[in-house]
Length: 104
Image (cartoon, rainbow, N blue to C red):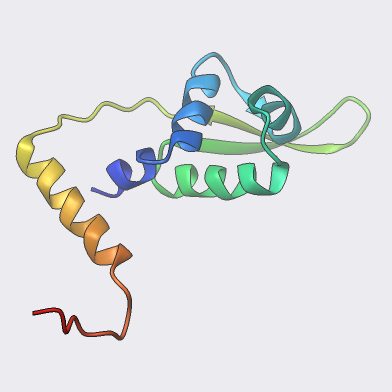
């Protein structure tokens, strides 16, 4: 379950919690959360990839392009099995690539 891996990061949880209060744009989110825009954009892309948020470009009154983010409605039914599957997927993704375990 890709969503559980995405939500495992505390920054992404804070972003979702903030956006639950209403849509916002990157600069405003960065100020509210106290994190840099570059790091925020990385987390927003991951949230968008998981289908948790949607981005909508808009023009400000002065003609400046702004990207607004909002939370997509979601609900997940967690079971011990879905959590176990997600943990296995996360463990496999975090394992060093191209190395064999010789600790046995």
